[in-house]
Length: 91
Image 1 (cartoon, helix red, strand yellow):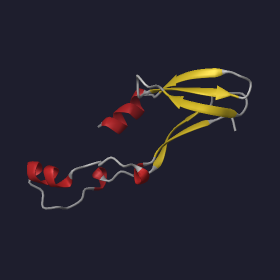
Image 2 (cartoon, helix red, strand yellow; image 1 turned 180 degrees about the vertical axis):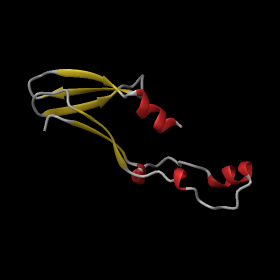
Image 3 (cartoon, one colour; image 1 turned 60 degrees about the horizontal axis):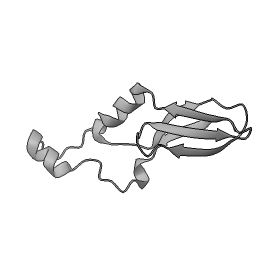
């Protein structure tokens, strides 16, 4: 397939997403879980830049929003995450 699919996979993340005890103390909540706080695994973005199969993907060591893909024909594409996706992850 010539597409690169970027997923958000919270279910296998080792990082704590929300420290509920701190949030509850700050906001004075009684422990009710808001659906907006629940992170789910989903497809973030689909990139169709290659004409043939994609054989490699690598993230930048210096910028977490930049990645490179290598296609079967030797074509390398440097891509960046769209701002809308960045803000959805960060906020």
